[in-house]
Each structure stands twice: as structure tokens, then as C-alpha cells.
Image 1: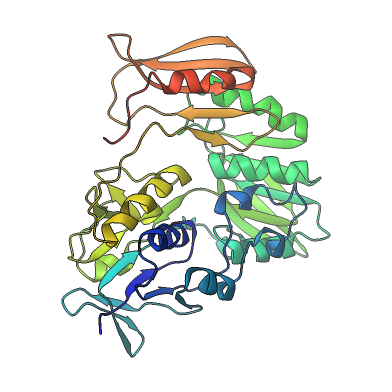
Image 2 (image 1 turned 90 degrees about the vertical axis):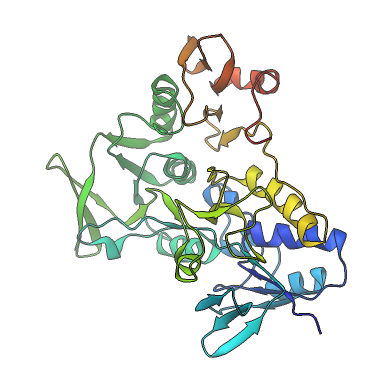
Length: 380
């Protein structure tokens, strides 16, 4: 009997892969393994839940049982893979050895843990179970401190303020979204957040957190302090690579794969936030969806390279729409700016005038489709 296709992880990457695979192969045995409860949900919705009045159950679309029935697969919840043995083609769940014909690592990424005193008081929201804990923690509370002014931090600050919380946003950056967009675009978001009631504390870092009675106190790098009922750390994510590393599978920033998403170990693949495709580790939905479609075909016997077209990133801050297509990391060129805050068009061009990236705010977001046609694809 042929060993099953085993997929580790039931997030967006894992479930979308298996959905695509079932279109090509309705019969092959598939086993999905997850450390959580296996509920299907859309991760981008985690940073829009409060303004929509939704708890974790409200964000969940299906439980593991419904997904297993829908996809005709077996899903093992609350189980942890302790080791991968590529030579024997087995994964270990404690003492149990589960054989696979092909193995897919859809492990995702995990939150950076700040190495500061009192970090145990911080919440992180990276999956539905985290959201349930955080949602429960803020019930009946007023003040929330958000650490980190990147994509996720800004989206959470916006979402919580929209839901009526008093929000302090603390970050060492000079303006919001500093790693994603040029400075004038990030600066345009500041008044939009402040109008919602977000207090920004930029160019400051939280150096420690202490508990005083029922309150928490954040001690900042400039010597000031901020009190809050609940504190959320949103300072970034790092791909989960430990399992692959322990199995001697090649790892760089993430698990290294080729354009067919194959790792350095035969019959072992990686997809989504944990994968680095030709040097690209993109923690967004569109690359993941492209990967799921390509890998499903490969696993069904039709080897297919993943291709990355132009894939804009939409920032979920409704009070100021922002969309960006950052230039590739090694791109040489300069930003050109047109318009005035809050309606800014920023274009990144090389010395020949070729468009390599953009960032748009407010009304300028409407130019997205036209600009996409001018951009080079990310991975051909």
C-alpha cells in the first residue's frame, strides 16, 4: 500500500494546497497534522476582527471535522511532529513513526519574542487560538498598548481603535510601515491613526514591562512609561525552520526550496511563510496561493514551477487605504513622489525610468491596476 501524502500545518498554506490537490487527485490518501485545533480561517482576518465585532468562533469558517469530510482526508489535531527522517521517509509523532510518500511543510511563521524583562505579560496574535486568548483578555478593558508599527502592528492598532479601545502604538521606527513603504507614505498614515484615537510613540522602544496591580506598565527607552490593561507584541514574524534544520534540510532565512517548492531532501516540500523560493520569503497571501496551485500539480504528477506575478500588498487600514508593491531588495533606483498627504503616489524607478515598485495612498490607490501592468514579474 502506498504511503500517504502528509501535510504538516492546517493554516492557509496547508488547506489551500490540499484543496488544490483534490482538484487533480480525488483518491490519494492525505493526512494533515496540526498542533492546534485545525479550524479553517483566513489569517488576514485576524487583524480586522475587533472592528467587525467577531470573536474567534466568528472568524472560524469550518472545524477540522468539516474540513476532513469536505476534502476526504484525515486530520490529526493537537499533535506535534517531533522529527523528520527523510532517509526513511517517516515523520515522528513522539514514539509513533508515520510513513509518507511526499511530505509538505506548511509550518508558517512564529512571532518574534522580545528579549525584555516582563515579556511573559505580552500577547501575540499569530493564529486563531492566539486571537481567542487575546480577545478574551481585552473584554471589559479600555487601554491596549501595541508594540510594533509594521504591517501587523498598524493593522491591529487601527482595528482596536475602530472598535473603541484607547490604543498606544510604540515603535523604534521614525514612521509607520517603515520597512514596507517610503517615509512620506508611512507619514501619511499617522494622522489617519491619530484621528481614530491611536496615540503614536515613535522612535522609542519598550525596554521592559511590569505589572502593577491590575495594570501593566511599559518602560520606554526615553525613560517614559505607559500604562495599559493589555499589551500586544506585533514586532514581526520569523519562519519556522527548526524541524527542517534538525532533519539536515537546507535552511537560510526560511526553508530553502526550488521553484517546484522542493527542499534539499527528496519528496519533502515547503510552502507558505516557512518557505524561501529562489531567495524570496514573502509572508503574504498571494505568494502562498500561487505556491498552492503549482505544488498541487507537482504532487499530482505534473511537475510545475511556481511563478510570482506582480503581487501588491494591501494594508488593512480603512481610514487611509494603502497599497504597495515594494521593489526587489537589490533594486537600484530612486523614489519619486506626486501628490500631497493623504493622497500620495510614490514610484520607484531605475536610472532608465523603468518602474520597479510603487506605494499608493488615499485616492491614488485607484492607479494600482495601471501600474501593475508596468511592473516586472517577481519570479518568472
